[in-house]
Image (cartoon, rainbow, N blue to C red; front, side, top):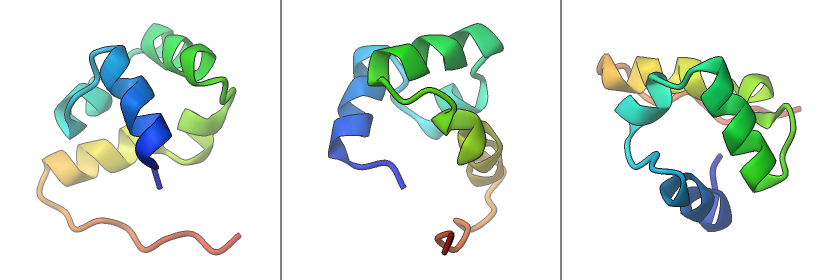
Length: 66
């Protein structure tokens, strides 16, 4: 999940809702990962896909157990 530090970083860049995350472009993802110093995390944890599901009214996914 996204903890308080990640949430703060997302808000600093203007991503204040699941809809904003769902609408991220490839450039946005790069900018977010650079700002958060978390290269590859957005894709690896499927933030955009999960945000789209939440915006569509689907329930949150179960936490991963890797």
